Amino acid sequence: MTHLSVPIAAKNLDQAARQIKAARAAGAEMLELRTDYLENLSTDLVKSLVAAAKSTGRKQLPIIATCRDIRQGAAIDYPLRLRLDVLTAALRAGVEFIDVEYENFLLTDSRERIARAISESTKARLIISAHNFEAKFDNIGKLYRRIQAAYPAAIPKLIYSANHINDCFEAFDLLRGTGGDRIVFCMGEAGLISRIIAKKLNSFVTFASIDENAATAPGQLTCRLLKELYRYDSIGPETELYGVIGSPIAHSLSPAIHNACFDDIGVDKLYLPLLVEGGQHEFDRFMKNVLTRPRLNFKGFSVTIPHKRNALGYTIAGRGAVEPLAERIGAVNTLLIGQDGKLSAYNTDYAGAMEAITSALGPKAKLKDLPVAVIGAGGVARAIVAALRDADAQIRIYNRTIERGRKLAAEFNCDFSPLDDLPDIDAKLIINCTSIGMHPYASATPLPKKYIRKDMVVFDTVYNPPQTLLLKQAKQKKAKTIDGLSMFVNQAAAQFKLFTQKQPNTKLMRKTVCNSLSRR
Image (cartoon, rainbow, N blue to C red):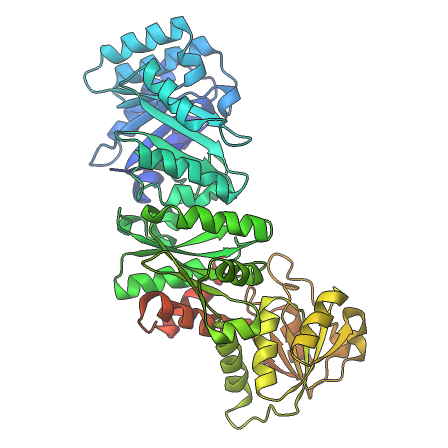
């Protein structure tokens, strides 16, 4: 069983009382009293804090008392002797767990004092923790065994920073290869998924904060996000995993719409943000890590910038199946993992973009010979260029990297111009396929307002924000606009059908995106 623990990181008792009440309201299953945040720390203060935690609410929640060493992330640098006094006082006050750093526990005086205090309690247990805020441990398995040897009845807690998502798999392997109570996950944005699936992998505890300002470690989610966005209460050992692979990924609303739709049809599936930094090598390593660990139960992925070409290359190299359309486009945005572990690759950007364009222009709109300017030469651009070439549009590609833009133009028999030539643009349909204007750089635009004409149609594939500066300025010029939200929902709906073999509620998808954006 995994407990959702909420840290209480207060400076004083009044603030702690408010945090405890908020934590219970947020769905905490356990409280962690971070006493190293308390000002003027004393044993009497800690006894009062424990009493307040136990008297709040009808149901008493288990409590972890922690007084962190400054080397292990303390808020205030209190001396070891006081920290030990505080923890033993918390035990006498009735907490169920105390957390002591492994390095400090090894000290003879600390070990004897903690062991004696634990033995005097009828229900308390010891958590022996190790944190690495810089990188992964040199040998996490060896460290785990050392903690067990130091105090066999203890709950080992091993937390480290993941500098890349591939660093997380050592934590997953440790959880899979061990039994009993243990707490293992990773910090940082790259380690985010380890916090979310800790329940699936049966880590004894995972942590979530009351709000963004109350986080006590890098990458700590809020209770609301964990429960609402990531369906925490529905996660179990058999939950199937999906996710969006990209870099950056924090802005993505794919987890919101797919998880909302999973919930809508009542399936045991979870969709995660998968920050895979780097290029082909890092992407390949991530996929190998996933495919060699079938017990993680990953079943499929959305793929976004910058990995759409990498996903195609990896699938082909592994002799997976690539749909003819995706192969012709030269980029994929959807991967499925079959029962045999083989990949199947698809591209739903093509249909999603064409549906957005034809819906805006009308079913009778003539794309044949229509002069189109496509800004960008990445995966989205490839899909849109392929779709418009099939409609016999006249396309000119503009791109900052000349070699890449010329290559794409040659592949699809289009014209090419450097990005610096945009002021001379002469097109009826303008499509931004770059990330220019995407949150948090919403004040940028790929095409200055003075070059937009009212006889143009302006399509921005960026969906966050839904009304980019490019679209706002196009509207000011009385030009017709197509927002990226339409394409995003269209392609996501096609992905969802591949993931579940069911049609999604596209109205729910669009509503979820709008609600998510309004909260940001």
